[in-house]
Image (tube, rainbow, N blue to C red; front, side, top):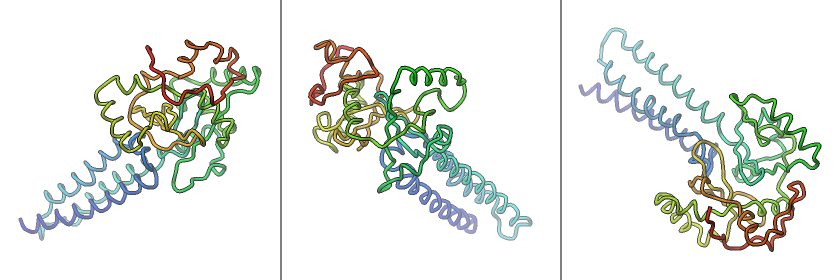
Length: 293
């Protein structure tokens, strides 16, 4: 029995070290900051815990018996099974890591390797700085003809397959670095999140933790939905640069664009033609307006 426990502990120690190494890669390289929680990381992480940290050492404990015929083969098969599961988990985590956060029409979308390739994005134009996922801007069509061309391309895409039939996943050649004029357009589309915060006690609790980290966050940042997975977050962006600073796990279902609130107060603030938006910073209040939505 002592030999069984010893073999189990050795296998468990090796498995834990490997798992911690992969987890550190995820937290500090592949999914920095809030991207770990905002992305689809739970299933591969839980699978690795179950198979590599739990099941592998347990099987070693079951089959190990000093001097047993075929013991080396049994241990080799266990190691092979564990390595296959580990390799699969690492590949999923690596391939699903966010390469870009794309802003378009009031939302941020995360693009992984497959989505970036499908959108024909030249990733070399948007290098990571200080291991921060680059934030890029997708402008709206410049002319009615271009808008019609976009709509024609999107309508032909299958709705039941990836990538999604959405401009952020299709028109990667149009991506650009965020400039001051783009920030003005972003502020024009920023979201009032007060109702989303109050929609459930757990969201209020998450917001309280976020605000403890970022005092006066409602006035400091502009907020937009961040869609990296089914677990939607709200991205807090710098009002001067348009870059994402942090995110809080609150869905956007109860948010509303501030200009819709402003339209109820001063209708002339909202232009009739969406192709020629007016986004003077003076029309964006420093404090979110309460919404009845």
